[in-house]
View (tube, rainbow, N blue to C red):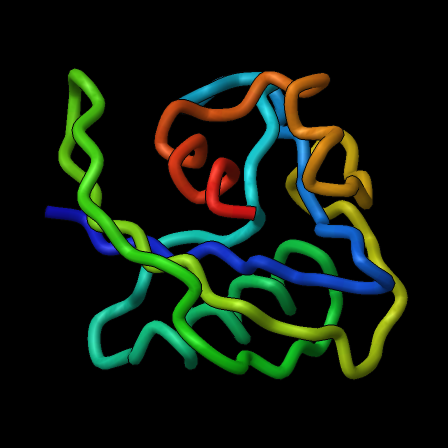
Length: 123
């Protein structure tokens, strides 16, 4: 089972979501940003690294928002969604096509990766 982290970053009552690019799983769908946990990393260490790589942001993780397994047809994944805040940096989209700050009630406007829907619904 692949272990993955995703950041639930809040600012001014809004949450950061990112749109995936072409190829891979869920092309052009929205998600909380994050990625695979590397061997030897904790979920908190992994989310700091992933957000630095993907968005050029330094974050401070605070708590585990939720966690659960999710099965795609080709693989099983265990997700850790971690609350965090931005502490520095200017956002750059190194892997994503777009990023938006949304209020929880705006979530219905966006099409999310299936694995993120449970976490999105908890907002």
